Amino acid sequence: MKIRSILLLCFLSGIATFLVSCSMSPVESQRDPAIVDTEDDSSPSEDDSLVIWWQQSFVSQGNEEIAGLVQEWEKKSGIKTTLKLKSEAIYEQLESSFAPGLYRNIAQGNAPDIITIVDLYEIVPQLAWEGKLADVSDVIEPIADSFYPGALDAVNYLNSTLGDRSFYAIPMGIGTHNIHYWKPYLNRLGLTDSDIPQDWHGFWQFWQDVRDRLHQLGEKEISSFCITLNKEASDGTEAFLQFLHGHNGNIFDREGRFVLDLPENRQALINALSQLYILHREGYIPPESMEWTNADNNFYFLDRQCLLVTNGTLSIPVTQKQADNPYTQKVRNRYMNEIVTMSSWPNTVKGSPLKIFIGQSFLVYSFVPANAKRPEAAKQFLAYLLQPENLQLLIEQEKGRFLPPMPELLHTSLWQKADPHLAAVESLSAENIQAYPTILNPAYAKISKKKIFTTALERVIQEGVSPEEAADDAIAQIQDIINHY
Image 1 (cartoon, rainbow, N blue to C red):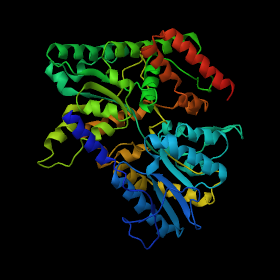
Image 2: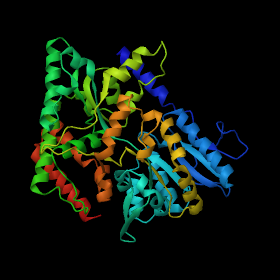
Image 3: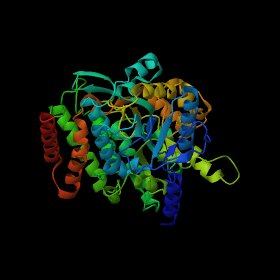
Image 4: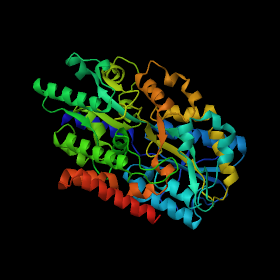
């Protein structure tokens, strides 16, 4: 498909990984740090410098901004600092290569002093549980009132060696699990945004009806929903959790006790499995969704093969955000007028507002290993980054992919109300966010790693297992994990 090929090339160029890593000293150019090797992480530093591993940004300006801030920090503090931009910490390499290497280095005492990363939702709570992360409460607590409460909830972990909770990471940015749709298809049918129902079943039925009407008009190739169902993709897990909570299902209670086996939660799991199965069976979710990676739903939606997509962060509309000039008007029109980001999910089956999760691929963490060689310098640097003017620079260079964890940073030109997507996620984040299940119970990291929910859905779709049987098997597996945790 020609259009999809073009979109793929554009998308990949936007996340090019030519930046690998950098080491900085006060005499080096702020925007041209020297390149150092990142392949051998067994010895993070050959000198006495503060060592930082930073996940390479999809946006080159983000890499440049952190490099500049590190150099400024060196000048102000007099502390020599080594910054490594980790190109291997993105996409599939994060779980297969970077995460095991990080865990090994921490265990062997060879870890850096600071790690800043997106997506380590399985490892970070586990490291905190095992007592392998430094408590950073002294960095957070003086400015705790500046954060969204949900952002702090997402880094408040249980330490089993101490038997208590505390802050073992710092939220540097948060993302939201968003719903985007193509407005022109509604216009074609004489519909408006206000026609979209806000109740759970009515919402999803509306988009099924829109697809059916478009098929009658000859638009035979379009599906209703770009929802990833591949059990190996984190997008699939995230989408399933939203559907489970849309049916008012809970895995844990607020004290972290397992409650999915209670009748009402078991039924919610069955209903979520049934709904997604039927949407797939009837063609409202493309059959290819069973094989999609985390990027494929983006491509399918941008290629207008689906009316609606669920996706973490604003990465989909941001691909269409271009400077205003005579050559970009078509793309800018897509961004400003054609792609809509909803300011809320539909209400749950019981009618309550649905809270979206942060803390999986929707959280930018900074944390300090408990055995870091320079823990005090690390905390000083993190406090420096959390100064509003510095954090604002980092967030804005990401072009709005992540929200600032502090509401005051939304009062800038980037988050102007004229930008419909940023205004939508600002509204979404104000009240309707909740921490990921791992925060309630660290055993969820293993539950997620085993892909229990998405495997259950795959069994229903591909093997003909009933939703009831798949739900009961999933509950039994989860109970076994918790019993042995």
